[in-house]
Amino acid sequence: MKKHLLLFVIAFITSAAIAQDNNLYSFMFHKQGTEYFYNLHNVMQQRDGDLAVYIYVLENYGDPYMGSPFGNMFCKISPATLTITDSVFMEDTTQRTFLMGRDPRGEGNIRANFEYHEDCDSSFLRISHFTDSDLHSNPEEDIVTPVCEGYIWNVLFSTLFDCRGDLIMKYHKERPDGIVDVYIARFGLDGTLKHQALLSENVIWDDGPFRVFKESPLQYYQWEEIDTEDLYGNLGVIVMDSLFHKNTKIFNKILREETLDSLSLVKAREYLVFHNYETEVIPIGGDDILVAASYHIDTNFNGMTAEYGVAVAKYDARTMQLKDYVAFNDHTGYYNRGQCMGLWMMTDSTVYFAYKEHPDPEESVTIVKMDTDLNVEWKRLCKTGDINMSPLFYFLNMYEDEKGNEKGIVWSGYGTRTSDNKPGLVHFFLNHDGTVGVGENDVVEVRPYACYPNPAHDALHLQYSPDVQPKQIELYDLQGRLVRTQNDHLESLNLQGLATGQYVMKVTMEGGDTFTDKVVKE
Picture (tube, rainbow, N blue to C red):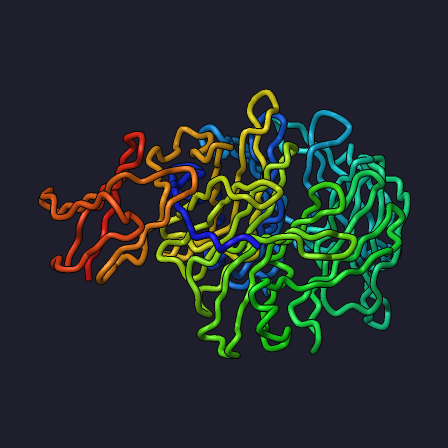
C-alpha cells in the first residue's frame, strides 16, 4: 500500500464580486429583518467560458434544513474577471431546479425540475432552455410533461444527462398513508417519459447520489452507507442496468496490510467513514472505481487518540477487492477529522481530489492532482482567509479554455464570512501544472509548502509539494536582520533560543524561486 502523504501547500485566493463588494462573495440578498441561507446546487462552465451557478435560497438563515423556501437564483460568473456578468432570480416558495447542464443536443443549456400542481393533485416535469449569453428562458417554450398523480420531490444530486442524451431523475413519492418510495425515471429532452422504476420502498433516508457507472454497456450506480453491528462504516455500491434493474451489491472496508497480521478486524476498528455528503465514487475505466472518504483508525478504542484523515481508494468493482489507496492525514485527533470535498477525473484520466481538514488555522481546501494509480503529482492548499466553508454545498469541476480544451480544475463552494456571518460563494481555479488558474484577480504569489504549527514553540515544520525541492531557509526579525539560516534538514526550522515575537521566514527553492511567510515564536 502507498505510504501516507503529508500536506503540501500553495496558498492563493480568488474572488468573485458583485457591485462594489470585492471579496469572496458572488452574491448576497438583503431584506429588512430577514436573512437567507443559500443551498449551492450546481456549478458548470458554459460553452462561452462563463460559470453558470444555481443556488436555492431559503429565508431564516442559520439552518440549511429548517429555512423557509424563497426562490431560485442563477448567476453567470466570468472566470477572467471573477465578476457576475448576469443573474436571474425566480421567486418561488415551492420548487427547486434540480438539473442545470449543457444541452447534449447542441448549443445552450437545460434546466429541469419537478412541479406539483395542486389543482389536479399531480406532478409535472418542466424542461427549460437558455442560451450561453442569457440566463433567462422563455416559459412559453418550456416543455411540461405529466409524471404521476400526487406530490413528488427530487433527490438531491441525483439528476444527470447520460451518454444517450436522456435526462435521468431520481425522486421521492409519498403514499396516502405517509410511506415514502424512491423512483428513478428516464426522460427524453422532448419530455417523453421513456422508463421509470421503483428503487426503494418505505425509505427513511436518501441513498447516495445516482451516477453513470459505465457508458458501454450503459450502467448506473448509487452508493449507500452500511451501518450495522457487523458492517459499521462500510460502503455498498448498487449497480443498475439501463432499465434500472439492480444487478450487484458489494461491500468492503479499507484496511491497511500492517494491521491485518497483528489485529483482528474488530479490534483494528479501522475503516472509511462514509457519509452521504462527504463520499465520492467515480468509475475510472475497466472494472475499477475510486472511492474518496474520511477514515478513522482507533486501535485503542479511544476516539480522542485515534487517527483521522481522508483517503482515496482504488477498488475492483466486480469483487470489491481493495487494490490500493493513498491517505492524507497531516494532523490526527478527533477534531482534525478530514472531509472529502470533491473527486473528478478528466478525459485524459487525470484525477483531482479536494478535501478539507478540521480545524485549520485558516479555512482552506486542499486540491490534489494524481493519476489513476494514485501517484500524487502535486498538492495545493487554497486558503479562504476569514471564510468558513459549508461541509454540504460544494462542487469540483473541470474548466476549459476558449477552444474547449481542458485547462484545469475549478472548486466552488458556499461559505460565510466570520466577521459578520454573511453568505456567498468562493471559487478556486488551478491549472494542470498546479499554478493559479484564470482570472485577472488571481493572487500571484503561491507557496509550494505547508508550515505548521504557527505560532510555534521550538520548531516550525515544513512539508513540500512533490514537484519542488527546497534549497535554503532564512529567518529575519521585523527590523530586517538575519537571525537564522538553514541549508539542510529543511523539513524543520529550529526556533530554539529565539525571543518570542514575529519573524519573517524566507524559503528558497532549487531554481531560485523564493517565498516568504510570517512566523510567530511563542
